[in-house]
Image (cartoon, rainbow, N blue to C red; front, side):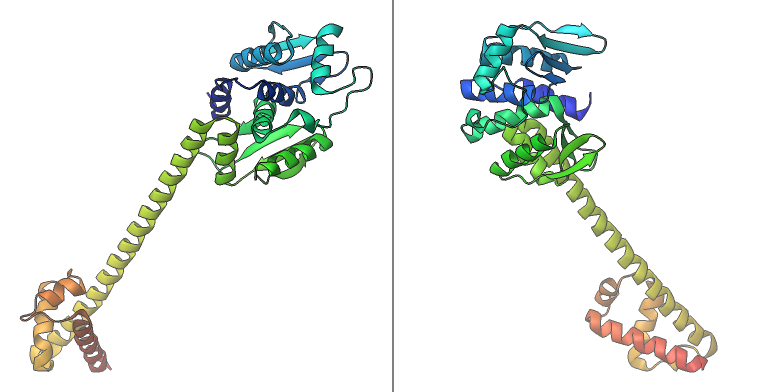
Length: 298
């Protein structure tokens, strides 16, 4: 099951309490029907949950009964009777005698909850969203530029700012930032899906942070090991030629400890002195030793 299907199934379980919101959700679905005209309304879906939801919305919002029927891989709800169409168009404020326009009648969307319900209907018919394992992306598609523009206005009313693009003959409203997608899904009635996206984002951020820390620590360990190897090599060059007596007495303990503990970090090696010395102090001594070795080679 795709994540989009999972989200839509959650939306199909959203409660239907307020008549205004039931009508608004049905309105959003109808404006994205395969056919929405004064002669016929045809709603197509491959999801049985959505088909049942649409059937219930039509009954509750417009007192219209329409049994879903199978058409290949699609499930269709078809309304052709003038009486049924009249109920719907009257409720939505359309004149059945004239050509249907796809402008949204804002009088039907009285409150923010109605706008959210309308967008739920839109998403059920024309929405997709990428799952938690993919890059954040949510789309709402329509074949009508004017409808895309008015739905943008509705989203702005909910403090959401979609972008719009054209893909062939289709206009697409989309979000690519995770926060907007989570807010949109929560607004339209899919808080579980929004939470799943949020948890995945937190997990990804935590994993990336851990990886950065591990990489940083590994790089520091490699750097320290390289430095220690250079110090040991410098000491051994001098010892082979001149012996330990070449080094000033104050550096000889450092020479002996570095050779004895070549894998120690500066902090570990500094703690082995009696009494212990500071890391800067040890670093200064080791630098002096490598400088003496380099001068001797010259």
